[in-house]
Image 1: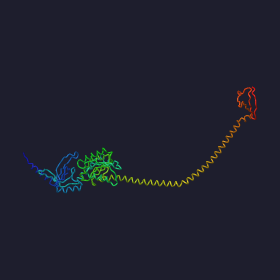
Image 2: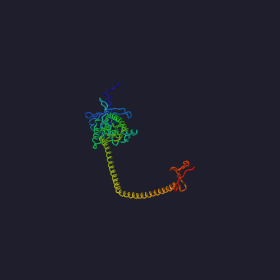
Image 3: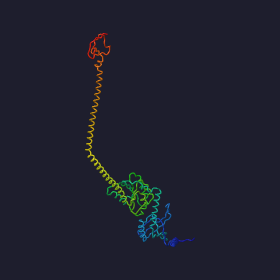
Image 4: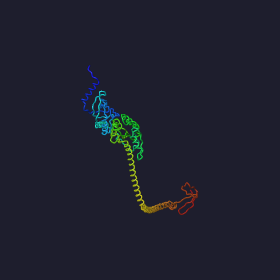
Length: 410
């Protein structure tokens, strides 16, 4: 049976690699692990994953020796504002080496910073496109922002300098505005960021009626640390959150998906606090401006009414005089009318009395007696019926011109 030793096999593999990769090659991969040792060397584990399942389909160790790493590290940071970190996709130029004892490895001598930036941008664009297709990209931005955002829920690390800066800025605002801040603590970098931030959002959601807005705060740092916020799950939660979200993550040059979906994007925690203070200042200025306008209008109204009163006061004597003259004329007319009415009434009553007197005169006993009638009285009472008189009764007969005594015979 033909056989070779392990050393011979590794040596043969080494020779094949030297023959086929003697000039080096550009390799695309994702950093799975990265470590720097005290000597300045950088050791990496590179992987490749399937696009859909994220299953690792290839794995290889790589090394950047100190003499190259001293150049690659600052160059990469200056181009991307990021340090090399786990989860980052890179394009590196490397030589393929086989060591008889340590096995196959890649030695990196250069890196394409533009490729990493492009991959980050592509990943971010995919998330934004997905949110847009789902119709939720602008949902949080379309919420009405409160005029006075006083009750503030904050997602941040408790010990983060950014959170301290935020609270200090609010507490020490020059106008003395009062804010109520409630911290919902979360991990703000590393693999636990997604689950931790989503859990904090859920806790705020359960108490949403107690707050006006939500604020997500993280101070500056390596852009790779901020890549946790280019995350679909966090972005989808924020986009659909019932409270307006203010995002205060990173420095001026950093932009994450969270900045895009949040109602307000402030570049730093301090800027987020200044934005909230400015909202109060806007309302204070609005009130002051309207108070001045109101004061001016009231003053104008008072002046107008004073002028009206002065004009009325000036006219009063003339009006009183006119009124008195008119009243005098009316009184004179009334006096004449009263006299005429009284005279007419008296004349009318005189006529009535005269007519009544005539009526009485016609109906008086004397007038009736003159017509040939006579009265018969018995015992001083006038007899009106024969039944009142008996035979031999003494009676008095009264004529218009005198009286006669008589005795009833029958």
